[in-house]
Length: 205
Length: 165
Image (cartoon, rainbow over all chains, first blue to last red; front, side, top):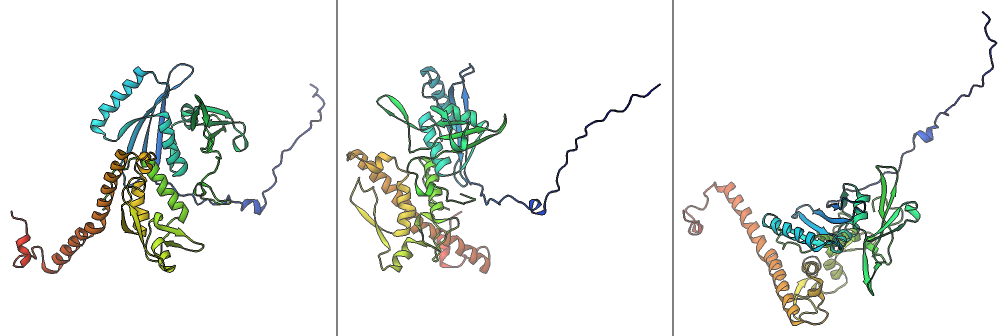
C-alpha cells in the first residue's frame, strides 16, 4: 500500500519571552491601610415581584468599647399597614434590646454618610451593589472612574415638591467587573471639608 | 473607667472623632502628654495641645464655656481649654441640633439646653473631681495590703470606717 505523499504543514510556535529581572522584582506599592475600628453592616429586604422595591432594612453599627447599635429602616413609600408591622416589631424588640429604633430611609442614609463617608468605617453588605441600589432614590450612568457603571444618588432634598440631588453629598459609584465583583466608591461632592479629602499620593487616606 | 452618657447619634459622634484624628494624624500626642485629638492642633512638624499652644503665646489657658449653649444662656463657667474642646463642647455636639442652635430662641428649648448642659457639666466634674479619688483609694488599699497584710486596718483609727458585718 502506497503511503500518501507528505504534505507540508505550517507550524506556528507560540513563545513567551523570559521575564527580565526588573519585571520579576516588580512589586505593587505597599499600601499602609489600617483596619478601621468601626463597622457599619446593613442589609435590605425587598418586594418579591420584578420591581424588587425596598420594603425595609436593618443595620448594626459597632465601635470598640461602646454599645452595639441596631436599627431598622423602612422605605419612604411603605404602606401604612406594613409600617405598623415594623413599629410593632420594634416595640417588642425594645423590651430586650433597648437601643433598637425604626428610622426612615432618609435618616438611614444620613447615618450612612456620617459613619462610612466622614468616619471611614468598614461598610459591609451581603451584596453591596444590590443593597445600595435599593436605598438610592435615583441613579445615573457613571462617568470617569466608574464609566460604564452606575452612579447612585442616596442623599437628596426637596424643593417645590421635587426631589433633587444634594450636591454637598457624594454619590455611590458602582462598576461591575464580573458577576461576583464590582468596583465601589464615593464620588466627589461640592465643597468637601478638608478633613474629608484624601491627600494626593496618600496610600492610606 | 470613663463616665459617658449613651450617645444620641453614635454615627455622627464616631465621624467627629475620626475627622479629628485625621486632622492631627494618627497617634498624635502633645509634649505634655495630651492625646485627645479634639484638643490638639497640627503644626508643621508636631502636634500641640491648645493649652501648650496658648502658654507659648502668653495667652490664657482657660475658656469660658457656655454650659447650656450660647443660644440658650449667656452663663459661662471657666474650663481648661483642652477639656473645653475635648469634653464639654464635644458633649454638646451630641445634643439635638435644634437644642444646640435654638434658632427661634424658644424658652422651652433653652430650658432643655440648661438641663443637658447641667448633666454634661456634672459628669465632667465627677470625672475630673471624684473619679481619680476612687482610683487613688483602690491603689492605696492594694499598697497597704501588700505592705501590712490583708486586714491592715485592724487596730488603726481607720477601723471605725470598716463596713459592719
